[in-house]
Length: 260
Image (cartoon, rainbow, N blue to C red; front, side, top):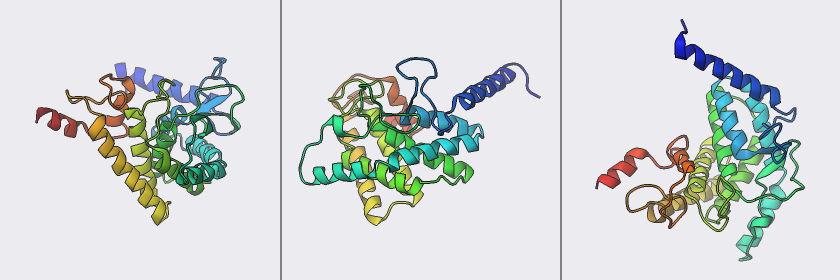
């Protein structure tokens, strides 16, 4: 029997699922907002991935699978761009933030035509994590996932240590701990899918180890809390994601080090 707060919670969940399902694009994308002019017609990987995770937990398998298939198509279509970026980086050429993969996409999967703060690595890590969570939870088959996982993992394995915008599209010149946490979780998830070949999995594992070492060395303030970006003593709400749901920084480990 559902009573009181349980009933209110059930109604909230039901209404939330209905609103999200109603506004999901036929392409599978979850729009950032159906009415606000700056967001209308666009979808973000990070925002959409968190929406998808909530819907997946609510049992909305078909809609969430459609979202992940949209992401897979969007990311897989940029395989050539990633290959070019990697080739240039391997040859020692610098790559500007403006040349990196987009932060947001049109609902049809294209690049936006208006100017935006367009270099955020965390979205690609968040998508890899959410994809693995959904497919593990429901055994769902996502068309195009193999190609897209390889593209996203390669992109992050090469460029994880680059400065980029944070969750709030600020401080493009910094390396943000919440971004590193999302990449850490995404690459761990990509390795766990078994879709990466030996070289790709090795590169992803090395990136995960690099992130762990970097955050331990420069991402933790003297008092024991995580830093907003490397070298800063500022904190930020986005850091909570490193503990949950990404579990990139277990709270028990951090507490033990603080006590020590």
